[in-house]
Length: 429
Image (cartoon, rainbow, N blue to C red; front, top):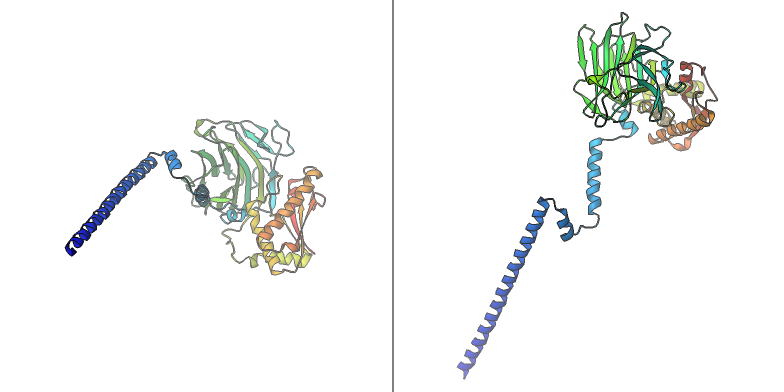
């Protein structure tokens, strides 16, 4: 009897074991099948990605919340990193340009009649007239035209220290023909001693200066340095000449630095037909030729306390600091990058004297009506206040006031007088 019971129990255990084994075997088959399906699906997805068929992935693998925004944010960050900072102060730190303070010649074409020859210039070759391009009154050059400014002494007016600025129009070479502008600087005998060329090359702005060195041989700078071009738009040119050093700037950035060149006494502007053809869209405006600028190889100080000494001296003696070196875009309250040096000097003084309050006054010349100049001067004063606050000055101590053209300090009938009237005053209260 016991033997039968043992045999029966053994048989039952064997059946159970077979059942367990069978279940395990079935599970393995199921797992293997599942893995096979998974592998095939994953391979299908990989193949879809390789072929660029995003639709397959979109249908099978729904995106997590915020995934699109994360990708876009990364792309924007990469683009921003490539372009670099664009704020006014950051742009200025790449430039050491300081405009001359005594105006020798200035022309923004505002009082000129459309279609007529610009009255402050003389024609050397070609043909030119007054036009309007993208809201700016300007000089339109026919291809090959050459002009020069009308001066009291037409043969000699450039000094040992001078700065030159103007706005120039550049086409988009993808849709239009090329521009080329040449600035020809000559000695007393009428021979070129240096020549600056501005032109296009495959959607880049190329800037070149050929010059006669102090040792008497011709040299060249900037040939292989393309700079970003604002197609179908205005760019700003600036240069300084200090005894023998030529520095050239485009839109606030220095692009050429020549240490030793011979000096010139006069200049001409030439529209050159670069490449033998031109789209006849050649425009320049907002000319400013001035005496002064940085001293030769003057070092930018990292301690602005020394630079603020002039501000402190003026305020101690007169109760105010007056400057013509805070510049704005024509007809706007937008600060030019080169204005930051002057604003930094004022900011340094104000931070050293945190209990002193100031009225920041904006003044214009008499060109234009009071209805335009009064609010414009107010907006410019407010722009200066905002720049000072950005440098750490307590805005509680600042009050912006626009004076328009109502308090001139010089004759508004001359270029020199109007330049003096366009000023910013910091009045101690």
